[in-house]
Image (tube, rainbow, N blue to C red; front, side):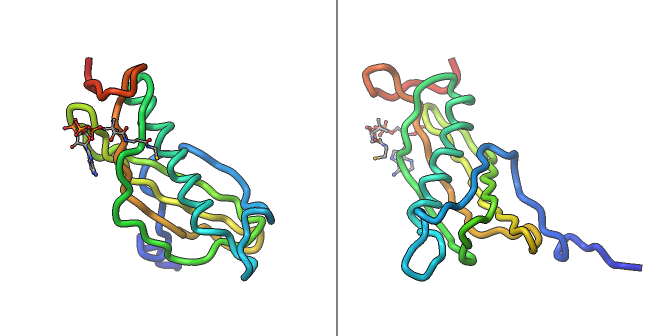
Length: 131
Ligand SMILES: CC(C)(COP(=O)(O)OP(=O)(O)OC[C@H]1O[C@@H](n2cnc3c(N)ncnc32)[C@H](O)[C@@H]1OP(=O)(O)O)[C@@H](O)C(=O)NCCC(=O)NCCS
């Protein structure tokens, strides 16, 4: 009987906020995907969750402890998962994880980062997230 411990089958934390495919134009000279493109997808995914939480405009104010765990090949399905971890007056801390699935491979986490978004009004000034 197979032992399916959690370590054997790691799972994404949070909920799926954005899914796309890594395209050739996003690759670097090694043929793998640019880290900057991945960060951009993570920022978009985090902003989906932040906008829903703040019910309006948000801005990215900080990105902390970004870790790139393994390269992303062209053609991989890229899935960004987000988890709201804390809410301040105007700020929201959101964990963003990126997982890929290759046609011949399993699910693997490639990147994670902690993003801080701030709720802003139409003039770009901070506003309270709750009411
Ligand atoms: C977001 C912005 C309006 C905040 O203005 P600000 O004068 O720094 O506002 P505050 O100092 O009152 O901080 C607002 C909140 O952000 C938090 N914050 C500010 N800088 C932070 C940082 N580097 N890391 C984590 N949190 C931070 C504060 O703790 C505060 O949280 P709270 O309201 O929950 O207590 C302003 O910094 C801005 O416009 N930045 C550019 C945003 C942008 O264009 N992002 C896109 C990428 S370029």
